[in-house]
Image (cartoon, rainbow, N blue to C red; front, side):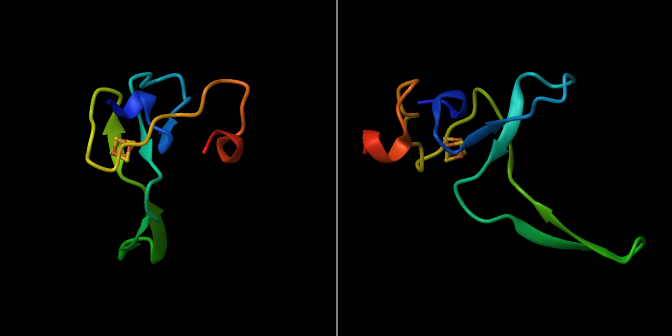
Amino acid sequence: MLCMNCRWFVHEDDGAQMDEGTCRRHPPTATYDPESGWAHSVWPHVDWTDWCGEFEAQAPKGRGIDEWR
Ligand code: SF4
């Protein structure tokens, strides 16, 4: 029951932090940067070994999530 095995986890594949990703269980939080004047959306940043009570196992490889449910 770890983020790395959760259907909501999205691995950050930027080559830098291989053990981190974002949680897509809920919509991102909107933040405003007063210096740039831009709004940003922020997904919760999680480590592969984190977990929470919203965990749902990933679908087996080769099968669509809807077929698996
Ligand atoms: S924080 Fe919870 S819902 Fe999000 S990826 Fe980790 S276990 Fe899944």
